[in-house]
Amino acid sequence: MSAPVVQASGLSRVYEVGGGLFGKPQEIRALSEVSFAIPRGKTLAVVGESGCGKSTLARVVTMIEPPSAGSFAIDGTEVTPDRWDGLRDAVQIVFQDPYGSLNPRQRISAILGEPLKINRKGMSRADREAKVREVMGLVGLRPEFYDRYPHMFSGGQRQRIAVARALMLEPKVLVLDEPVSALDLSVQSQILNLLLELQDRLGLTYLFISHDLSVVRHVCDEIMVMYLGRAVETGTKDQVFDSPRHPYTLALLSATPVADPARRKERIKLTGELPSPLNIPSGCAFAARCWKARDRCRAERPELEGDGHKAACFFPEGG
Image (cartoon, one colour):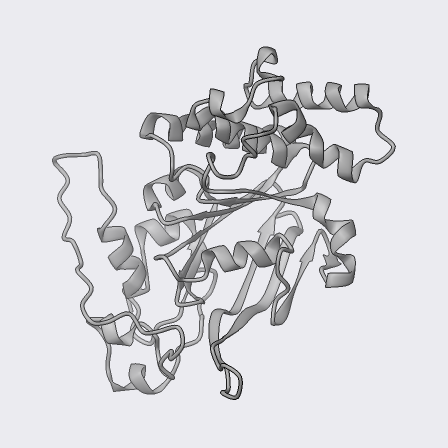
């Protein structure tokens, strides 16, 4: 297997909230000790409920925010704030909302040309236009779209524009933050197929963030399941889907609809309250909602352990 393009070790992100003038602020641990590696041309999917830390991880990897602890490297170069300017070309992001992520007052030519104008100072106007038109063709946008405004496009076309903008600086890594969740089902498949085609053609590495496991199964090579800021299970796509080990993963999979009407599966309904991120329990954070929880789970926090297929559980599925 090729060397990782993205290598992260113990990434954490803590926010301070409240406190007022004289009070002590509280801490929200949005991301806690997350480690992963993504080889060139592969896709790591990060899944979990809202509030599990997926988007925080995206902001850290795209250098929008620094980690509070831990480290990560892009193509062997450790990422530190003083190196951000030189490394941002290598990592670009595609946001969830294709309607809100494009400036409605700019033509598509200006939206796509802006990254080049800012980051390629010596590039002539003619060269910028040629590059914009080249990338538009790469993502399936017709030449006559060049001088149109975002409101003249459908949601799927807007997301193609967002993908094109992310490709303008020829990145090595794309962070895809729920890139198809705002689109109709048929359009979702078109965008996913486009992303797979671009990955194969350009050798791109993807960090794919989603809550939709049916989408994840179509595009990913490996999966990291997160709960309240921590990774609770990691493994290949086949390992996680065919032999889930963590009870939380099992519950997520049970809620995923299947297209086969003859296939029945039992829905696992989680009980108990989701712990507050301001007061995460000292033991397993999932213990209050887990049907397998015992006294040890409430007293100790399980580590992410295993040979290849890892789970942070004292009593995993399948022993």
